[in-house]
Amino acid sequence: MSKKKNCPHGHYCKICGEYKANEKFPGKGHVAHICKVCSRLSAAEKAAAMDINRLMNLPMRRLSDSEKKWLESKTHDKRPAVADTAREVYNVCFPYAERNAMKKQLIINILSFEVHTEVYDGYGDMEMADRRFTIDRKSRVLTMTDFHTDIGEQSMCMMKTGTRY
Ligand SMILES: [Zn+2]
Image (tube, rainbow, N blue to C red; front, top):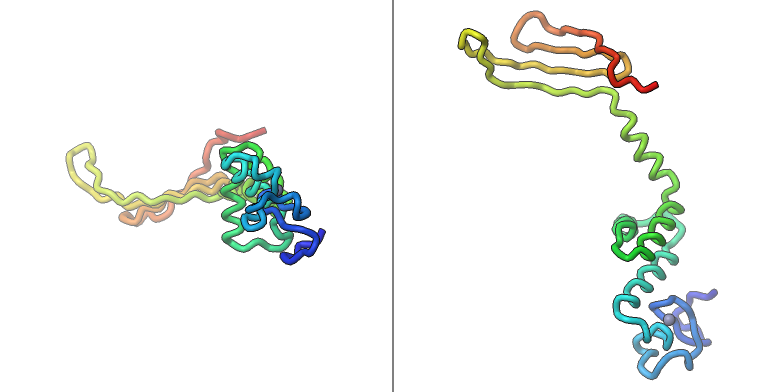
């Protein structure tokens, strides 16, 4: 199928994306580039058909950022036909996207957070708590670093809760 704009055998319908003979276009359809079949569609149907047509014709090369964004947005489209097509096209264009998203969740092995606040002990005395907690999932070690005392780092092994067998 030729994609040339000046195809001598007819006109390109921007809705269904097909080249059709002149007589397949209504009078003003030549200008609007909408064939007779598509001109009968409602505005919503036309919009959906155009989206699907564009999805099917996405270039099989590395997509630009805007093309990728557009494709991603269509995978959440309210019209099921558009969303289904978009998801299929997306899976073809990005076969590893799903797996990579899963991997991203799996590589959170070290969680670290710091506490910087004023705390009151049992006698009403204020002291500063400046501590960092680091949890290493692989070695199952919880490390607490107290920036205020000379104890420095304290480590303990976590209990094996949450282990999946
Ligand atoms: Zn058409």
